[in-house]
Image 1: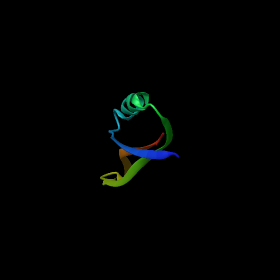
Image 2: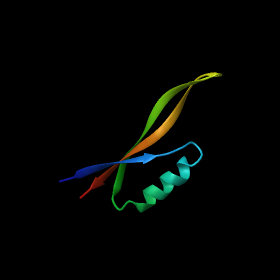
Image 3: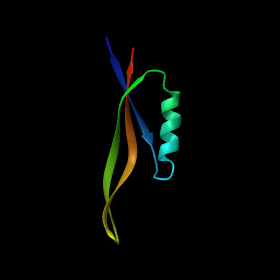
Length: 61
């Protein structure tokens, strides 16, 4: 029987790649999916989007 665990990884634009790489290398099981939480933001130049955190689905067992 497979169980899953969902991890939340808070990231910023300037450190996202490094943080994700470190986190993935610390896992012991299979990564099923990485889901970004994309939040729309409005700035003086118009609408844009920003990633606040990533959800990482890990298969355990």
